Image (cartoon, rainbow, N blue to C red; front, side, top):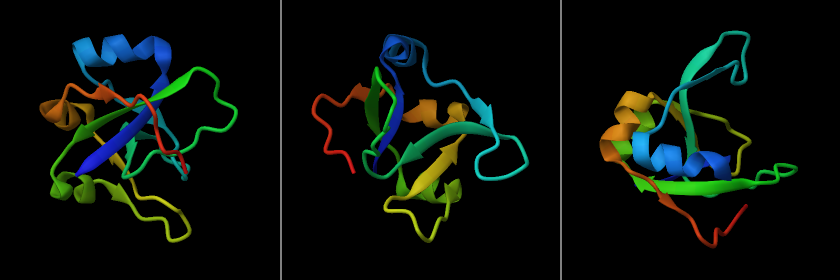
Length: 100
């Protein structure tokens, strides 16, 4: 399955060279979660100048294992640990995304 990750353009070379690194944030909760936020389609990053998308292929089972189900979202999101995500890289820069 093809997945997408939004990041700042300055980090793309590091991600491609060294792999993803876990972020820790309170994704939709009061608890801090660790991983790399990815989606099943390019997601628009309003008000985020300098952001770019990278993509890679992962097995659907990996995405589903870490998926965050959001009934009202127009896309599917998953918070995958970097150690797992890096098994399927390196990611590629999305040149002309079709953003939702």
